[in-house]
Length: 194
Image (tube, rainbow, N blue to C red; front, side, top):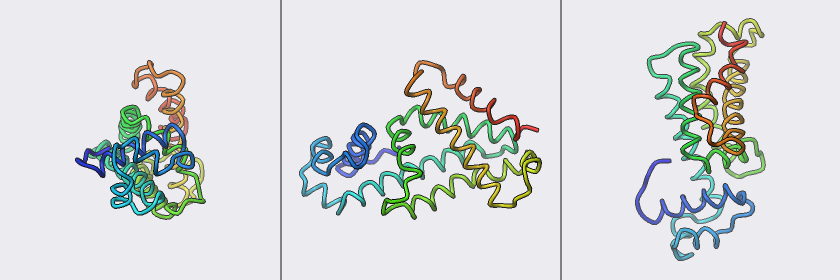
């Protein structure tokens, strides 16, 4: 996550820690204020409501993720780009375990006020996978379903990476990231690496 200074950053960091441990529903604004070491008035000055706080936190996280994918893909094509993005995503999630847990819990929720904004940013992140998937040509063997099909495949690549990361971080956190990346890429390679 990007580093900001001051009260706002302390609030966001506290909210992330608490939501990763307790879920968003199990986290109160009082909890956030206490963890951040700020007065409730300061908390509400920066974020008028709990929904605004968590929307900001999630949008920031997906923005960081998108930039990570974009950087990892830069100058690469096809399967090489996918490998680079999967490794970079795993490293990012390893360094931001609370964000990984929060994203996994929230990415598929449809009842949150921020869902539309999160959906748009998610589409932006998935778009980073679309062109490399198209370049592999493997998607043609599945179905020439057009751009929507490519986005679905991109979501599958992202989802497999996220779930692989969570399994690793919860059950086998001492395993090197290279092993996890190799395993995720092996699972993906049957159709994309043709």
